[in-house]
Image 1: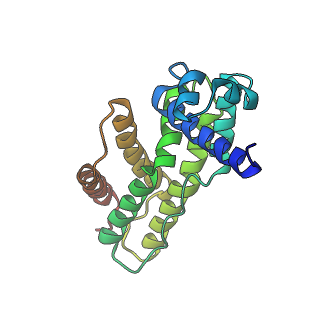
Image 2: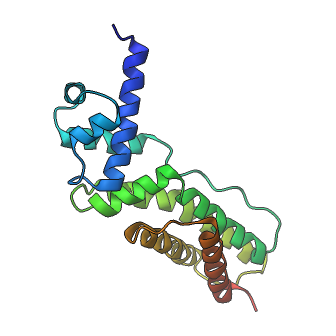
Image 3: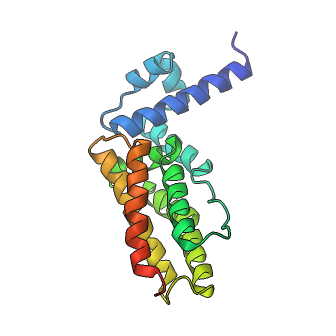
Length: 200
């Protein structure tokens, strides 16, 4: 007879597999059969936990909400903005391309219309973890005279939009964001942003 720990382990495996399946194949392209087989469970065992695919998908969304999907960016240092901004953009790329972050992005893109609660999960997480800290960083650089008198929140949001556009493109056309590609994106976005904000 399975122990409580065995049951918990199976449930965790089921949720992990279901999350990956929904992210890769979308809601319509995912079946309970496929999830059960990948999780090494009987189909009936899945239905015992969730009455249908919608309930399983709801559980996936709830799990994503409860997890710390976005990690806080590292604190600012004393480097010049020409070095500090690229390092922060690189940190944002690293965080936004982590497996869990990519899962949220994929699900929001693929199923945001059908399950609108996914979009705030992405948007609020992005604002909280990326846009606000970057705006605070730009404000600090303004006070030091390195950055001209700009709307820091707007500049940060535009910078984040450029980063997320690259990630969205990679998801839509299924191109791997290799370290080399990310490095090139970091340089391009940093150069573009710095040209607009550097104090002359």
